[in-house]
Length: 636
Image (cartoon, rainbow, N blue to C red; front, side, top):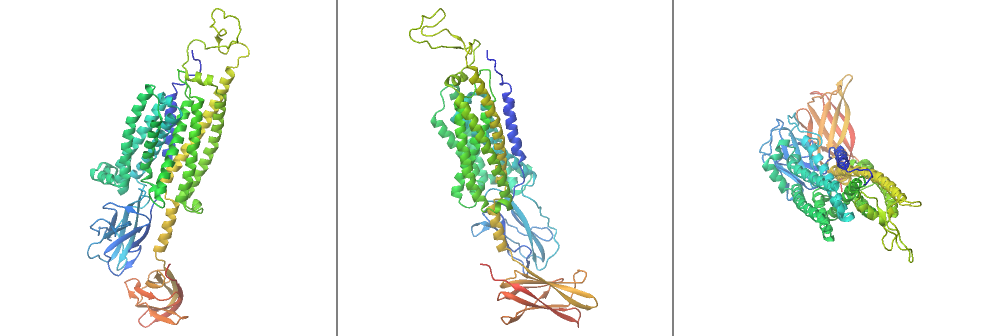
């Protein structure tokens, strides 16, 4: 009878503990995602004060966006919507959104609230204001914060991470069976791991499909079952990718049952099945790559297949590690153990998978980060540094695992490898001792041509137990290193999943650069003046926007000595450039009940201009003060 330690009872608990650890670590990394595109410009601009009401509001983004009927709302000072029709792209440009405003807009400050979906499938939102005629108080209230910082957003993030975990378990366990040890398909923990991976991936995909609509529109959780919203989800690219994933998973369920029957019939797993499995896993990975970071930005045609390889390598390596760990911890009543040859094959497979992970990761890092500086200045870069550190630790653990695997393979002889695959029997195992030519006739109980059989391991000088003892020690060492490698692998998966929800550094840099070029820069000058009363000195603040050659907006505000707004009967502004003999140019300021402004001051030349400011404090008293401002050239 087999007297080794029986672990068949603890194996399901071990599998459950491993899977719970994976999910717990993955879900522990869930956090609010950052925006994946940015608003690069708007017309009207943020904070603009217009002389006449605009006919349209137009937004421009750093990449293509999609939107629903309520994606762009323009709210009056009384919080009433003044754009009767939904947004449309401008002249077919996918990175724009425009709404038409209703007829005559009263004077006051209007709020523009927007929420669109960027090209990689993540929603972004924001708001800004503009004024028609003059600023005013507004009752419009717009939600602030991350688009994912909602109940639906957090739940959507949890199911995204659960989907990655299911993919790793399904792909990794299947690759181990097809490539390393086909007989693992008959081992119950491995079969359960395959089923668990399929169930986790299928359930999370269904949940993501239902939550996609309210996730994009910031709707309530109950709207997940709205047929109209679900219909819009199915017509979008992320929704189409989720549907394709469900179809593939349904086909996988049929295939897994067929493979299970073939394995039970001992008909084996051929090369065609391995190729079919590789194609299925690749198609499954495409449903991620075609709807996330790889589908937006530069070099999309190359980035998508690289992302597919990255996902597959992650699944083969991490899911395979968990499968190997289950098999190393298992020794059932049949006495079977995973052979050293299968461990060696997985070692080679894992090495290739890690090599692919590193190569594809380097390309993705270059594509998403864009510069060395961004590694330390952006959220994506800092998270990537954490992933790189985890990968280095994984490579160290993997090197030790390969050493233990090499030792185990060196010690495993054909006899022990064969014995490991044979069921144990109650009688002592007997071995045949070779007999030379011309030996005495066999005695009773002996077979012709052989010596008397004796229980294996009996007799002085027998060394059968020593290799077995060393092999067990090597397996224990390998099991410990595989456990460490699997834990580090889960950490890498967590960080990778967080990266998919973080704005790439290259996109963030482009957003800042475009926004800086699009947003007008203002020149502000504050000049003190004597208000005509003892110890009373006021100030006048002049703001020129954008402060460049060409048309500028001028706004002037007069303040009292205690910082309050002052009302003056007249305020005049003229500009001269003494070096070139230009001016004076009258700004023609108009009193707008609280401040003075002009919207069509044209400055023809760059350089230092002198501001001549005349403030009339009473009907008969006035003062003129001067200061300078530097006007810059047009960009580009």
